[in-house]
Image (tube, rainbow, N blue to C red):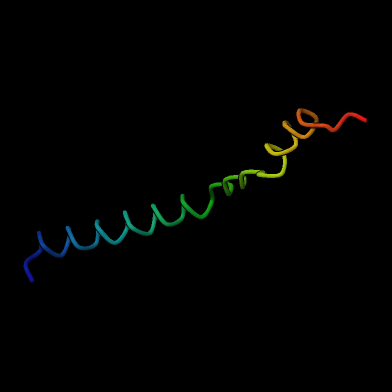
Length: 49
């Protein structure tokens, strides 16, 4: 392997490690709360009587 190819390979590996580290450091996205959406319409169709 030539020196240029080896440098490219090392740089590629370092970039992958950095990307994985940044991804792991990100807070998880909150899960959508389906119950909250359903609760909006709960009082709309109340029975009278």
